[in-house]
Length: 386
Ligand code: GLA
Image 1 (spheres, rainbow, N blue to C red):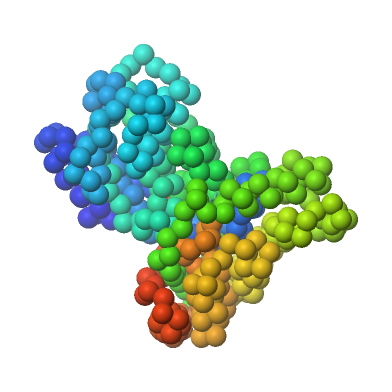
Image 2 (image 1 turned 60 degrees about the vertical axis):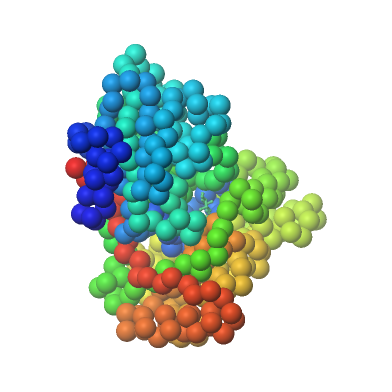
């Protein structure tokens, strides 16, 4: 972590001259233990923050101009809030300036609010680990402090989601930003996506001798161009047909009663959401009452439902799950939006090498490019570092 903070400070000095930033803030990527494609249905999710972070060094510059630099690009983006609406900014910088424009519009001020901001990160990009939510959340906590806004964690998560929905153009839910902002070490965040009520649920993996592997298939996913929006539309259609606002309020009995009014695909999409919400609640119960070893089958059931009913898995994601289970994992599933990205596997610690080797072998047998595999460390959410 020290290195990322130092990198952010050095990058800031290099782009904006020698003077120090006012502070350094960071926010992590996330993985989801269970509760997939339930957030935009007002349902339940159980994500955690990972130990990969996006770090921003920032300073108020006394003007109304924003200057945004990144370790990935030599050029600094210089813009005003008006440029965000004009849609002419480089895409990566819209995550930063989008958050700034939303916070600024919500709490206008006569004071000049321009900032110089430098971004660096070790969250893998495009891997389904929410690098974009990490960036939005780091910027949101930084501006909340620099502008003395006093926003709550939930409000800052909502600003990140609005940035995705209204500025980046991705119709995502509230899960990623909530995990990035509210994450706690060794815990999952149990979030009711309708009330936004949050509970921290301890995982206790280490005491139970368990590890959670993250397998990045390195198959690039993209919410805007793949079926994410179509899945969301199917859920909305199912809810409308059932006469409710959100599928969160449907039971399997309601769905079966309405079967004649829904086409097979829409029926299956809704069945995934309803059964997934139930699996999240059961996972929370098991974590509390029986310990983490007991949750494996629920993870695998979630994957099967995402594969068969929601149809957002890929050959590579299915291969990770099958190979992990064959090598002794207690449970495994894709995590995130799907269509590529990452899967997770819950394993007994001594099996780490066996499961890792099995997944690598299965990938090479099928001619897939090598996956990246690492042990997930559920971590703290967004914070000020310096
Ligand atoms: C993406 C979205 C989230 C959520 C998941 C699926 O990660 O950003 O809001 O919908 O997909 O659970």
